[in-house]
Length: 486
Ligand code: BES
Ligand code: MN
Ligand code: ZN
Image (cartoon, rainbow, N blue to C red; front, side, top):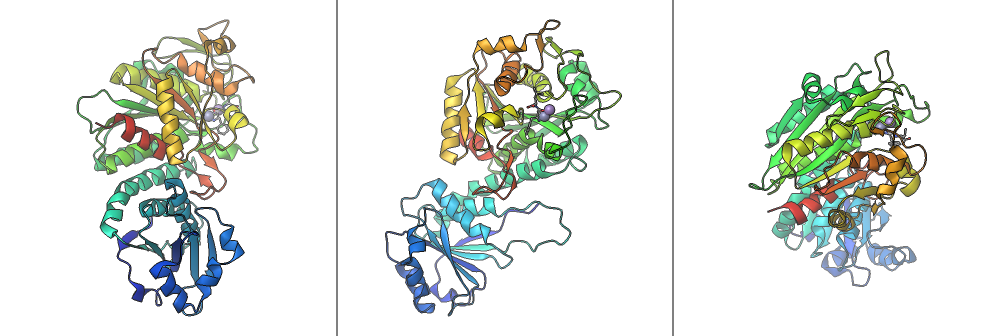
């Protein structure tokens, strides 16, 4: 919905401080003195800065937190933020500092005095990520004003921040898609938003229902058959990496999940507008890759369907044949995400012979029971791949946890009537969902399934207001940089 806030980097200009009308944020290492900029601000405010820095409140701050000084005498600004950030701060701490600044950002923008802090680009990234709003209130709040960073080496910082601008666009795209209600983000609308990314140099193909039928994707089509919106598979390609086989990203794109005939209870059902969150992450990563012109080959595939109860809807007890050829007994029409992914995963492997497959899905409530909202659940047939994903997630400050997937769990999804059933009941629900997906992965292909049901949407975090987080976009971009870029 909102565009990322405009950010500029320039030389420090002490003469501009007194008359600045937007917020002023001073980045301070608590173990060091005020520095030249701080001393000037302190002089202008007749010692208020020094008193605040010497206060117990400032001493109690963790890296990336701030104390506010409101309506300081001697300055035009309404707010000075004293941000505690040690010189040796981590990138994560620096992003938190930026986010603390963004949280108080208004229409008049802000001035960030970062001097020679070597994580200034990360401060700007955190600021950009937190300066996000998604709502349909008609009394529209004014847009965030531009932010000026005063730094010792503006060109260097601007160069370091350039890929972050691409990532911010990617994260915002994911959040926008995930936040949209299902009457607006229909399967048609979703596909159109993805097709629009052709402007960025992505190749985008849309497979419609008749083609999916020809391909034999009865597992996916069964989920969407009770909806007025047509089911689709959208393929996005970014081929920036020569002749290498691509990495494939696959996303669950259930634009709304009523549960189908196995109808969900009405309390909280409105949250199921985010059941396309996995597809949203795939789309956001593809956008970031295109914007930063990544030198990697990546294909992104999303299965777009709506799970509705209807006279034509799939029933419990139905048996469908997947594109792979395996028959599936439908025990619960609410276990629909795995049915969608089964066919898209199979199609992805057959079509692209990828070097690795990563799927993202708001797949189970059970993963929320296991991990809450702090960590996504990871399942794999390849410990090296999951190790690299965990490393990327850690570096980017996104929670991820490796859960087991041994063959012993396969017994829970054995069907008396078909090759497999789509629900294993209450026990180990996140694992049996992953075990189901594993049937549709060729054993020689490194694969990781990421269940993002708990992390795609949550209450306020350091880097995002309440709502869609965009979890995974920065982690996967980091993974692609570290492992797949040529
Ligand atoms: N989309 C849901 C999972 C979900 C739950 C996502 C809460 C986000 C928040 C999924 O399609 C679902 O309904 N899963 C069922 C599976 C069960 C029927 C085997 C679940 O988790 O209860
Ligand atoms: Mn469901
Ligand atoms: Zn679902």
